[in-house]
Image 1 (tube, rainbow, N blue to C red):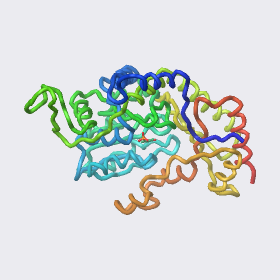
Image 2: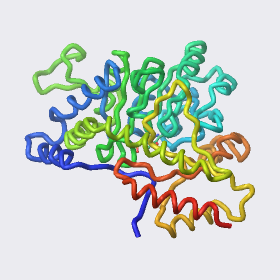
Image 3: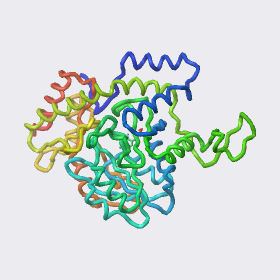
Length: 384
Ligand SMILES: *Cc1c(COP(=O)(O)O)cnc(C)c1O
């Protein structure tokens, strides 16, 4: 029996040749590929600057460092996300507050945002859930009014558009962070990128990515000679390497095709699964043209004879090894203990978690795969 996960990479012969080329070159780490990938991501997203990093988690942390978010301050994000969107604030000593989500998109609800702002709030981290952009006009309007920074967690959203522009353009934010983990839309193995339009933030991202070190003669406080470098801040090593960047450049060439296929698959699920009662797919807002990373199926279990874990066992029996996005972050033991969160704090995200199942969504799924998956879903959901 074939095994289906919710996501997987698509690697072509050209992708393999691109990586082979780097292996046979002089540079495995800081060669020409990283800078070329960064320039291509700028062209693709429309942002002025881009810094490639070792993961989106690293990128989110780096963005917090570059913006100077730290101890005694607070950041706001969605509970319906992967841990990194919140953890990045804790790494720099800031505290996390959550804002509940919209039930039909899974995105942070801008109508609830202002109530979470305190005099300590410094940054908002909206998460573009499943690849659909948050309402960034609303988020950035509130941020401007309160003097807050905005860092978009776009781990799901490379290739997505908001009001006719690519996510990552940073029209409504200080930074946007992408992930290139193999389950995401394009991959570099592990990897990520931060885009920005602010030259000062760009300089800080660059320096902090590599130990807080600079070799730029114009920035040095003194200069002992041609070997000389200076550590001017406490940075980290979050660099991407040339093997990863070469794969990323090759994948970026295929993103139009990935996007078309992902949207096609979601449209197919929408059509076929509409016949099932008590289930729904996400709504897509008029401002959004998503390159979907996830296809969340929302199942109402209230009138059913089986539980969600039982449905998962049935699906596994049919070769569908699915996942749930997400366990609300505030209910993780660490967050409960540290901030005193408990069940009921963010009821919409909690209900979303009770219903959500992520369907297989990746470009290499064939028409036959989709027929099989939909048949199995119907059988598993409709039988008592
Ligand atoms: C995957 C993911 C991340 C982390 O990405 P990595 O590249 O694995 O560090 C962060 N935020 C969201 C919403 C994600 O889905």
